[in-house]
Length: 365
Image (tube, rainbow, N blue to C red; front, side, top):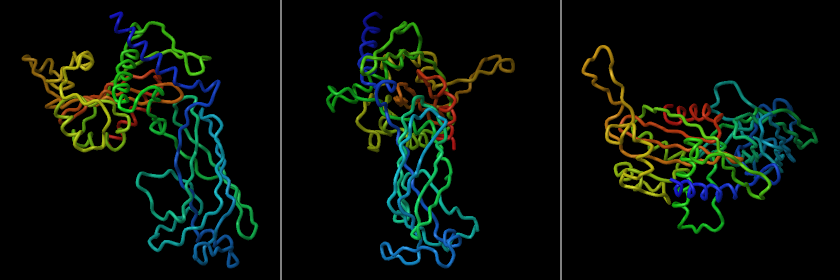
């Protein structure tokens, strides 16, 4: 046991020594990608028949705004947020299919996956946050721009919502780790953090020096579980779409066979056998053969028969997420045919409420 704890501490010391202390140096950045757009018709109504128009890109009759400056602020602990500048933005042409009668003339919205429509009328915007705590919040946006006739446009745009998922980063890799050693390093780091967050007695009162050796971090872990009643194929698809960069290992031959050939999750540790000692230690109560959870009837059933919430345990995803500035979220997802038991460990307990909502939205929506 002493040897095991010594190995865990060595892995954790190496990991934390790569994490910058935001109190003494620039910390990790979180980037929120958005686009800025405005509709021509509402602007033309405001400007009237003599509205400023642009000949940009050969498009006649469309208004444009110039030298746009977007400024950001937030009551959430995101540090100082740099402003963003856009040289020129052309208004969107009227849309014939807009029958709602409701139109937002100037708007900034987060970019959704795969959204590439009408790019010539949308300016990409990047909001750089430096979280001091991994907390969801709102970013307020103000705008100042110039029209062609010299008119100055000032105002407040809708706020940008920052979710817990926007805080998800991959753990930093030490500079001396070779590329082919990265999967093994992430797997070892997951196991070390899992043990450290499991019980205080695992690492005692150990503290770890951060990069620059001016500050230290301590791990105070907490645990939670969540049952997701969703078929395995749906859970696998959602995991591949949203959590693939953070999966460090897939364990269990049935699950490995379903995931590995897809090629979306790659460069990780694959284990066909579920006899790994780490997995055994975390599933000793439930057992892989019977599934993750059983419900037993009491008074009405003297035989004590049980209802299994799933038929067959296919295997397990191990997910390692770094939460800036220096925290971690660990997921062990025990996948069965009809449900998945997610065991959660973290060294930042306030995130558990947000993670619970995130998992429901991700897998049960």
